[in-house]
Length: 327
Length: 298
Image 1 (cartoon, chains in turn purple, orange):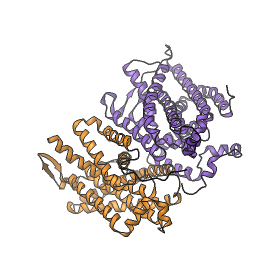
Image 2: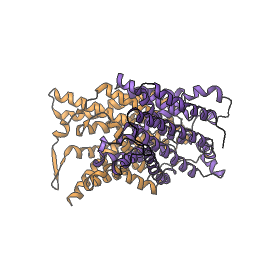
Image 3: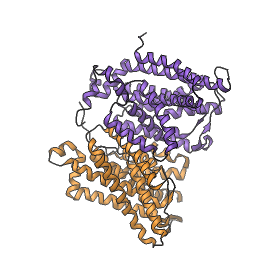
Image 4: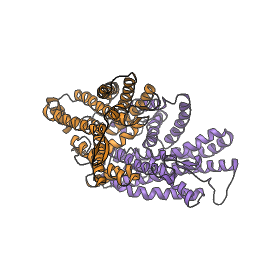
């Protein structure tokens, strides 16, 4: 058992803090937190791929697979147990990602980005034209039960929140471990120079495949939790514009820490609610502008502002990569 | 038999539309190595500009005949203005950066363009059916087709032909081919590569806007059409090999016929069929049919 590092400790501290906050704060804020925790998991999926230099423009695929797997299990099999639904979502993502991984692991850079996008749009096309599943309107999910218990009212809301938060924190800790494992280091090496990774005896294809599957599983969990807290799924989950917003979060927040995308998702969600209300027609413009400015002035995201003091002395391969002109 | 004819004509129609909407994307990628997601924004701008202008023109009681001129004019205006602003204002500061980063930059630009379109033309839908309606229909083996649809096939052939002629028979075109083949060697030979970037981006943007402008009379122009077209255009150029113009022709034909076939035989698979074909092509040729050669990174 490895020692907990600072990120993991703060995640563990954050869990009771979140639950406490959920009890005190008004329910609409708690709802946003819950929804953005679900989406945050998808952003984490995007982030661990970004660590390998791979930008997935189609992570919404697994977000949607998770949501729809849970929804279908509820609709046709009558399953409403949260843990069972979570498991079904994970299994669905595991099978599909392992298969698709054989295609995607051959590609890098823009090909990876655009092929993951194309794959997610296949599902979008399928779901939008399937009338039994409500086409573009989607359908509703059952109210979750927990190992036979079916709390109601306030208790149901809190239970779902606590479980969502616990799953997200546990996944974040697991992913943090992953980033510090040999796979995590191989991924960083792939980002820098794949050919040399192969010369050193590691298989870049395998590493990318495994990372892809892990990202898919995490995202599908996000999808299940998100769908259960909203009680509804629709094909918009796998539209490429949804996937784009996950990429946006990772660019804005940075990939410096596992916590960054989680906080970023929450901030984006809050910002979205207000911006859409105040000026619905310039909301995307604000997003785009912020994204451009982040890429130009803060290439490693907002997190780099926070982390500057503590990581400045550490070895940082990206620091010189960014200053080199050309490819 | 009837279905076969329908598939053939519809396939050609789709292919023409796809070619017009995606050739600018592949041209920009070939020369600049930028996969321009904002291309969808150009398409939408062109569609809105032409639908709006045609509507204004016809409402004031002018003859429909001249409205065909409005389409290319508005496409050129929309493409040039937006293209120039984006290339001079943003992209030129980022040349030589990572290709993936450029995808993100153009994605941000796409988001901005989407809202610019909404700010200019609002969120209402625009219809400009008059030019398409005025041309009437023609019967092919008993199936009525709008002449406008057939005219788009003609426009696509003219565009593709003049692009091919321009690239192979003019000095600028030949130099551009050199840049597409190898940017570094082109620079070393004394070609001012960045000068070509501006020209290429403007041509590409205008072609994207033209795709939208030509489609406007056939559809109802609503927010979100740009997001739809970019995925389709991407499938086309990936099949043909990104950056290859003959590839865009072949890609458009393949996707066009795949889509037409599925529309006539099994409609629910329409969107699915496109990507199925793409996956099949990529399984055999991982970087498309006419992929550009890439240097190995050591």
